[in-house]
Image (cartoon, rainbow, N blue to C red; front, side):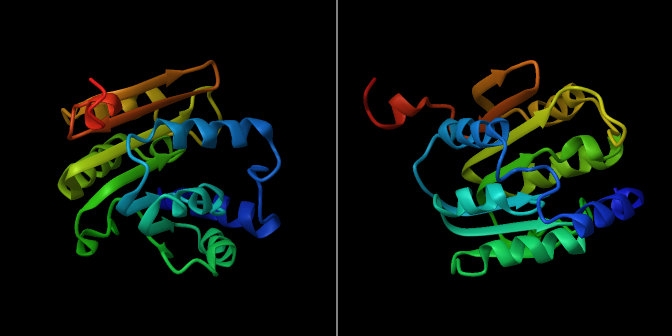
Length: 200
């Protein structure tokens, strides 16, 4: 992912919202679908690598006691820190993945990989999946949400990204696929939301 850093630094240097995450209905709807797919109302400790400008970070912070977000672009980190500066439960760090995966932070009961994996090469994607496996709590949830059409900076097909995560053997709780993106949610606890709440 390192060789793509100049591209992203110039992207975030030119605009604090280069993907129009704050204004596009497509992005707002996708965030809403992701948040609705989470199996619990609240999480203890979450990690959101590849946070970009921090728009999803803001939304996730409302559902987490502690949220660590990161990006490998220094400009993106600065923007996300400004966006989340008043949130006591959110911290934004500079991480180059998979090398800087925050193992020292302990176990996460939520890991959200949104629009990240396809920027990695095959080996790094599998290392990233192993990091998820190693640091996902016993009751943890893993989310992947990714753009499907091709684009110049893509290193891996979205299907291969999701296959790498599916190979971890977690129970798949939710699957949502459209022409534009795919969203999957896996958990260590294979019960449905209704089962967790004693409805069935």
